[in-house]
Image 1 (cartoon, rainbow, N blue to C red):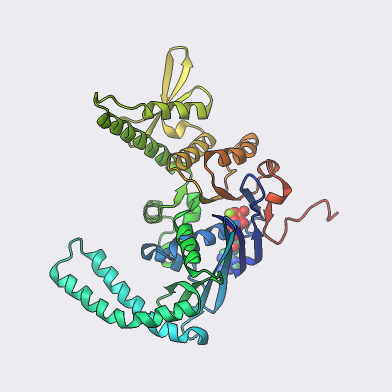
Image 2: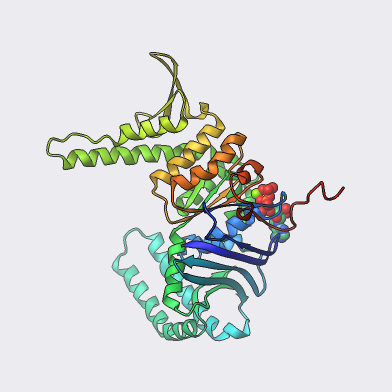
Length: 406
Ligand SMILES: Nc1ncnc2c1ncn2[C@@H]1O[C@H](COP(=O)(O)OP(=O)(O)OP(=O)(O)O)[C@@H](O)[C@H]1O
Ligand SMILES: [Mg+2]
């Protein structure tokens, strides 16, 4: 499944944006350009938050934070996705409590979602549900049951796939489709929910936080990094560059170690497998020079050995790999060893820290690391040069051409 079209009529700085990602264009890597502040990062974050955080109650808070400024009835975004020969549309729009068209639905959904939240609180707060809690949950469910037929009838009639409440029930976000087969559209939404990834520098993650927390955290870096870690833990589909790039590499070593252990258990002679060795070789070949990457003995970090003569190595800290090396290796490890395939990967600022040759090469590298669709928010001319002009999407106002202004 691929994204075919994204339309955002009016969200923050995005005005009348409509981008098409033609499936006939190969590789499926689409750079998205704009001026600074033109809305590239906002667009990637919006796609991500709508498609990954709306279905899952635990991630709703990020959707709520991201859309916190929406106050009125408005269409947030429309997507068209293509699955083999089917084109399925998904629209996300926000409505106020008093919207006439949805009055009946809101009357039922408001208490329903509140009850659902009460159950969630009980199950979250207690690790063990005693008979008292179970009884309480049963009572809440009894109040929910009579509301269900009305909600279902309204959802089917209006082709609504999902509803979220935002801003403490002042706003509701409705996810709808016009696709004739409702179940297929529902499957598409659920598929996307698990197959969209965001790759971003840490500073952008800030946008997923509540405004009051953002204010409180000014200049408190420790708190900031804690919050980022929370977000990464809760929204598993996020990958962050820089310091945290080593986490993906360490995880792939752990995976290989476990695989070797499994091989030993399954072998009658308890011989370990060779996955760990092959992985270290793969990373060495990937860096293509005199560096060898190993896991640290406690498997919490990586150790870099650099060959300085035939039989001599020096040991480096992971941070002593260059910024560009660590970024490229981290991304490779994350995609390859998480087996990310048939997915949509949204990558912000991929070119930072990469030499122009690496910016050019990263296009075909990404395509070879996994059969995914990549949307890249970028300013890199070198990266675009690796593709056809048709691949390159621009968010208006179009980049001004200094030559034409003369
Ligand atoms: N609620 C809002 N309404 C209108 N504009 C907003 C709103 N919130 C943020 N902005 C503007 O959006 C811009 C940020 O956009 P974004 O980060 O998506 O740009 P970008 O294309 O990624 O830029 P860069 O290339 O510099 O990373 C800022 O100029 C900011 O002032
Ligand atoms: Mg940006």
